[in-house]
Image 1: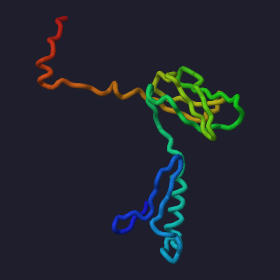
Image 2: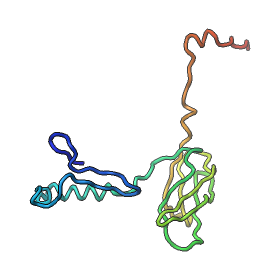
Image 3: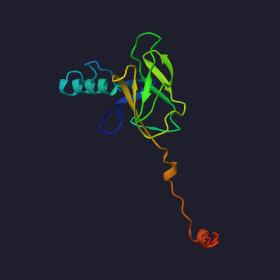
Image 4: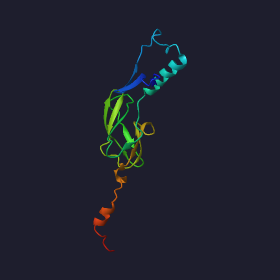
Length: 157
């Protein structure tokens, strides 16, 4: 985040679990540096630290590969049942609540690319997920010159 004039790190951010750890190369006491007394630098720095501590939400998932989703749990009793709805289909994913999160296992129920809404009650969207087809189908393979010469002749039509 901040570095010395020689390029060495002064303030560094590390990701630890679901949080962030900020390490400063020197104490923030005024006898060692004047960062704290410079409000025009220190206050925006604290603000950016707080903003960057938010959860990194994925914007898209791949059908067939990303089967486990994480969403914010809405609280309430154990009888709460989350449902997902796409363009044409609606289904109930396997659910497991851990703390403030609910883990949803779609178990191959997402078959079409598009946007899916997670909800408890119809019309009350909790979170949205986007699914794309696997890009393996777009990897085109080509023959080189030798491969073309050795390939079987096309059948007459």
